Image (cartoon, rainbow, N blue to C red; front, top):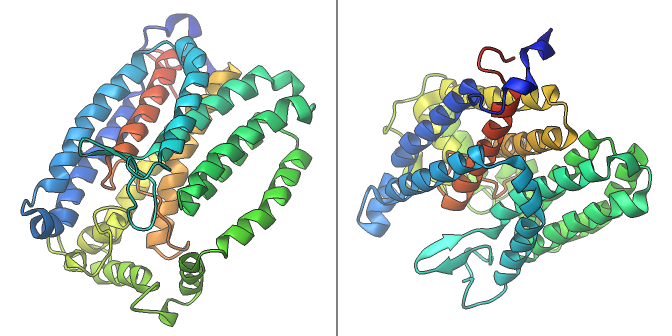
Length: 379
């Protein structure tokens, strides 16, 4: 009965999924509001302008909205044609991060390209490029997935190249995320389990070795297991986020009233903005954020389930997974379920690259929904 709501012949000019549109508006709006609350003290202290971060984010919202609109309107056949070029562009920009004059060392890593005062994080483009490429190649080779040499190994190599380039930027968390996202895309495409198992077993020793080659990664892991081991060092973020959530309780202490953001929570406007939400809006605020991402996941995965063409299905699944897994990872870190990572909270954390590419992915999802949802039907 559910599939009858989709009438492909009538959908080329259909409207986008308005529930998904509404969810995105609420996430971006909530993000701007909480970013101002989380960042105004640091912005005033460092830049003498309490609106510094939120103004920049608002500009990126405008740019991202235009990019999302274009992504929603562009023919998907054109997206398929330019996918190899997007992948190549992603790899080129990733290698530019190794040029000292173009990519300054920030927080011990070279993850950003800085030109004319604007910064760009190529790993955000890599997420989109990988999803587009895997949807394209796994659809193209769907009838040959039993032939690992010609159909599974080539995309696996592409995944490993992107993962390696990301790792070499000293970004272990995003590298691990890309690997996991690629694994999920392989799984949904029906790649044989034994190939997936070999893939994981081959990488696991390398990943484990790399995890223990940097002192700060080991410290993060140890303090995750026992934050009290280094309460003023590696365990500080974990304890600060936990204290903020405990202080907020269920209802929170009120928007703008939080104190942990004044220096108690490192990166309160970025990776740990959920801790500010927890302190000021309480667990009800965290549940609202989780509810919005749940709504996003339901609409995205429902769309993927109902699509008949494999490329569109893989694309919808990959785009949805990329955003949802990031959100769950970030919220899990703040609530001490996972060790600290550098994964931002999509649409909410400060950061132009993350915001713009999250909106582009959402625009492509809306593009798919225009083709799969009729004007008078839906899920």
